[in-house]
Amino acid sequence: MNIDKFPEIDQRRQSPDLSMLEIIRSKFKDRLIKVGGAGILAMTLTLNTSCAAEEIKPEITYSTPSGPSASPTIETTPTIERTPTPSAQPSEDVLQKIETQTYPDSRFESTASWSDDFSTEKNGPINSDKWNTVTGPPIANGEIQYYTNDPSNVRIENGLLTLQAQKQSIDGLNYTSGRIDTLGKQDFEYGKLEITAKLPAGVGTWPAIWLAPTKSVYSTSNIPAGANPYYANGELDIAETSGVEAHVIYCIAHSAVKPTNNTYPNKYYSTLKLPDSDKTFHTYGVSWTPDEITFTIDNQVCYKTKKGPTDDFTKWPYNQPYHLIINQAVGGTYFTGDKKKYPPDGIDLSALPSQMQIKDVKYFKLINS
Image 1: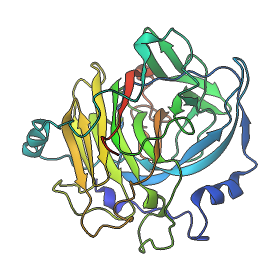
Image 2: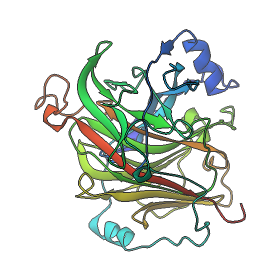
Image 3: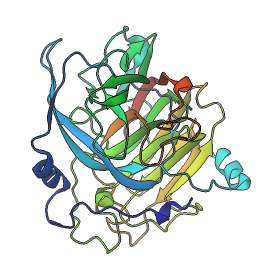
């Protein structure tokens, strides 16, 4: 399926001079959700979801609890997020070329300046100094999970962060799962970020590791007609996959206008098939400089894009801070599974509970940045 056939979504066409956050807050200011209990998070994952087309998905701002049993109040405000879409994979010769390239690390510091090694942490909740736990129902993308901070969905166990999707009914939804992020706690602008993870492969699962802008610095006023205004500030999908396309990992650099300065057949993304992605831990990474972004799997290039000499922010919006998001959705606009085989919602119940497992997350600064 050609992902370029998917319609672009313009949520700010009514008020192009307002920030996305201002518009969203004006529409959803009354949607407050009280959350109880302690959150759990971590980073080294299990994924199986594909992505490529663009759509809306909820982003959430929250206040961090001040005590061990305090309940955070979160304001659910949808931001636009990518929707995975299967598309033609590169030919075998292209994959062979990609898989044999090793990416150099000499531009980045050799010691991580920020990290979370879950093997050193006790069983229980995630470190709330580093992570937020997102809770509440989905707002967009047709997802059918309810995110919780319950240990059954988000926990550190046996040295691993686990985000678990499972059959459980809450507030009219039939599935629960886990989502964490670093919003307000750790931003990333240039450098190398690596997440070691194992990725689930069941039909109906939609795990993702991605970076979203923390403060959108670009207005949509000058976005060309037909471009997606949300991607005026970009998005970097380090790894995304789906049980519908089991073991196919997508690496994507989103921008309002698709770049032209690269040699990959899909221009702004590539895929790599890992037959053991749900059985073996792999390290998913992004190496990011002011003029080049490279996605890697086990330190081998999956996709690379470079800033062209005349590219403005519509093609290269990545010179701003981003925060890290890790989540496992269930269902979704594209990843609805196989409803004929698995009625009524297309989810393979035999694949649940489904776990994204993360060993560690490491961030290495760009030297002289």
